[in-house]
Length: 338
Image (cartoon, rainbow, N blue to C red):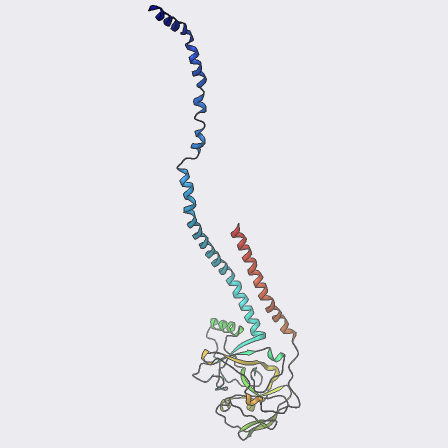
């Protein structure tokens, strides 16, 4: 019985020095803890808490990005308009000067000499008409047309315009007059053409004015006084003009014919007040009068080179402005894309 125990004891004793081999596996497995923690490092490199934050950022930014973009665009558009406003005002002012000087000008009717075709009587709101300043560069003046002319040398003013009370009012008048919005000058008159150069004008036959022996049936006359005059031959280069309000008009009957080179243009439309807006055509009765052509006719002057610069300038201003705005839009689009 003791034999086996002795053998086992001996084996244990013999194996005591062999306890070191079991330690060897522990020495071999000792480095494993160094390599085992390494694989989790990439997993812990992105913390779980960071993932929702990264996912939530675009969700929170999407609505915030759209609103600032719209606000920025609105601010940029407002800023662009404010920057362009002075330029637009300058261009508008220059174009107004060009239009007023060479093309169309507004005139205020200050007297009642053209009633009731044009209102200007005391207590009336004076009509404002547009005058075509180019038409007589291309054709003759026609009988029956309403014209505006300057009577500085020979005509007495029908109205009195008070002097400005202060410097501000004087400057305002000059600016408004420069762009065609001011009151008509004291020497600017508006009348209807009755006689052309060479015509023989007289009154009255059956109560009507005659031109070259032909009676004119004038539907526009208001309060005709049937004042006797003539026969008068209209000199070359002059026009015989009369007001529609015959009893209240100081015209060629008293002041003589008007030099044709003093004609500013043809009044062709009433633009103010709105209730009075209408055209100013030649009446059919005048067109159908079949007045014989006078021996000498008023010919329209040849095309003036003075009109060429404003016409060219007006033609170039529009495309240049459009190109400028296009370039601004392209630069703005590139900035937004960047």
